[in-house]
Length: 486
Ligand code: GUN
Ligand code: FE
Image (cartoon, rainbow, N blue to C red; front, side, top):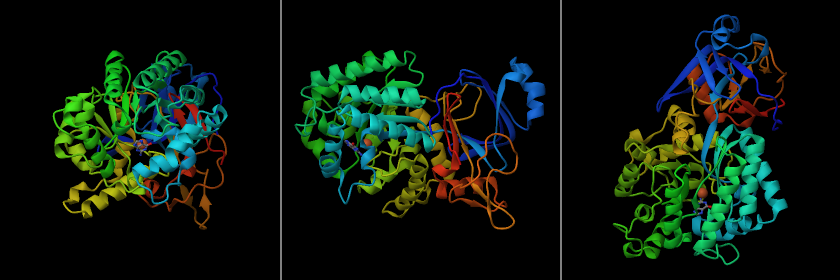
């Protein structure tokens, strides 16, 4: 459950820490100490440092009052891992997870998605859905989420308020769509979409003036649902407010791509060619602050343009499989130097879990290998998908150097992971080993650890079989935002 805000104290985290060092390499710190100050910033990372040593050498160096430090100990076998970053999801679609039948993108939008999103203009319903989505994603270790809300300003703002209250880092976007959408769910004009977007930005700026936790994000739904005038005006708005990111969808589905070519011949935008990426580029939306979701079917020329503009990609493997969009070739994007993160894309994707997205990314990469033109090196490793879920995601949402790893100067967005350990008698042992803290007896998920596994093997078991039962506690900016009671 989500904790109420308490007075911030300096914190000393002790035990094992695992985080990404490079795309294909995890760093393991054992018997380590990490100090997090009252503002939530990591001020010390010490290897081979037990509590006594931390108290003797590290705390005095930091000038901390040793009597006023909150100590958090990972038990034997548990480890701290950076919080997950979900670079693409629709908070408004949460009630529809798992409900998509055999649909594909364009009929899925009309059948399932637009009616639900429209219904969230009901404030009570929006509060119910958004409260739950924030709680749910936090419980799965998502410390930062790039959310799409709906076209409704009041409930979009409510989502931002709920993220702030629960302590979840978030990008919150009021969705813009002024064409090719049903009458009951469409912006009346580009001017209305811009005015409403400005109103939502102003609300969020007022709610979190430093934008240190929650940020507004300029959100053209996707090209087919936006007029050229709207896209141009949103591009101009992004240029006017350079601290704001942009998020949209690109090249998810083949029928969608055909629709873009039909709707936006080059003369309508002044684009260099009739590609999807060129439409965004010509309207000022393809920037280094842009998060492009899916990018399944980008041509080589489009990938080159995306790389040149330094735009980012949110890989959404669960969604791409569920609504039969295709298998994105992530290696090709990474090889071009494009920053990539993972997105659950709820409810195109049916799971709120970034761990599940990581698992899907691994599996989809195998299908890429097996497909015509696939190569062995298209395969993604456990280490690589965990990088995408943390450091890669941080880069995608514009928080590189702030979150995604355990380094001095970064903020403490983290999860404590615990796997079930099998004891001598075959019983699952939880909450034993190094003591301290609250009791955490009881279920520990489906991950059985026998005790002889290496650390990389334990982490692999977590990726393939773990779930929210293994996410014991979650912090954002040093604040405890979720704790499992068992
Ligand atoms: N393209 C336009 N809108 C959406 C959406 O809500 N979800 C997904 N997956 N793709 C989209
Ligand atoms: Fe989406």
